Image (cartoon, rainbow, N blue to C red; front, top):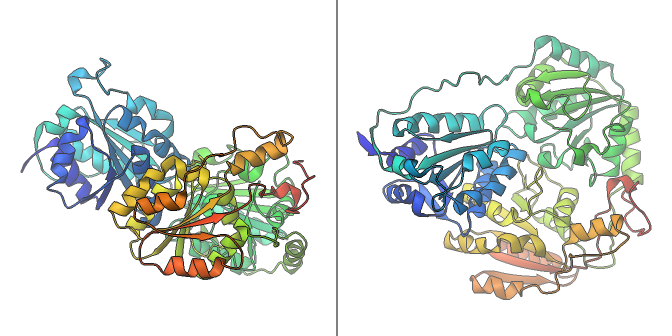
Length: 554
């Protein structure tokens, strides 16, 4: 069968199970867009290429398969960069496809030419510049394999326009053989036995899980280990929901905006079991003081992460689910009643607090959790609302929270929620966002409407860039600079311009009824919640005392 490069690209994507591409057309991808007319792949037209990358990320997080985004050369490709970096930081499988100027013009500073493979080198798992059309089937096969195996991540395929137009004979997809790429899935047996001995000898163990736990096998194995050996579990932002937060063994979120009792447990533990976690700065703070009383076991599929940020006593390289299954096979049942009683005391003495005398974000999120916790997927933007959602919604399932953790990317939420809803069309998908974040990508409301996505948007409006304002509250002696959104659009009018059903919440008393009606609406909805700019997510180092404005960071 004779095909051109663009047709071969789409045929290879189809063979890899791709049914959706998020993209934006341009001159250097005209052949691909022409071929899309004859392909079963559904193209979703975003309003900005950054939206395509974030939507592909949301799709991947909700489906478990690599998300695919497509952009033209030059500014189209560079607009993908933030979304690629976001996927890289959060280890999300993505294949980004960019058009490039014709091969003869590469390196001449031609119109809309950029070296996108060079630009993305530090934020990509691998990249390809396809110079021979016959390489397309192999490149696509390898790209999907690389993106989804080992530590997942984004892969870039850059294809010059002339290569898209050149003919080849389609002979099917080749076998995958990537020399030097052999991820380790099974942990070393001796290291696993040593881990079991350490677990059985510990009196104050804690499990800390990161994004590497979010795979099909690992959460069940995590639950078995926690139950069998009675070990409390805390999570990074990427792992929120991987262990049910309503469980007695749950400590919730760790770190700067985590619970006081999670951080106290880690500080007083004699054994810390890190699983699929980077020990990043938001979780550990000052690593010299982090878990200083504990031996540390670190399980991760990426050997580069082990020992990178904190000293490790026992490394185990391997897939989280596979390694945990082996540990569970060997470890005996244990009780740590005194340790659990101490943790229960910390939970009673140092709970999460917020004002109850007025409408707050925390209150709304708790009501949302009570109404939807058993059925919703929640996507967030970045800022105060993100931290409050992680603290107060109480997630039950891995992947139930979709958020930008590593890069902390404002503007992620709306396009990512679109991607989640495309992947899970029959599920309730809720976007939690703020007035600052949504204005970075609010044009993607048009994408949601064009695709008839029944997204539910809860927009907290405090007329401020709340998280930066909060940092200035603590670090800059309350000298607020550049954080007042003194002119916001009328979000209700804006939503109505897109044909979106709208609601507003002004008080605690009306919250539950409005949310119930909004979430029952069959189409897309925007709920605007009017809140005070002075609300602050008090950092955990303050013990979540929460209401005393004289407190400062230690």
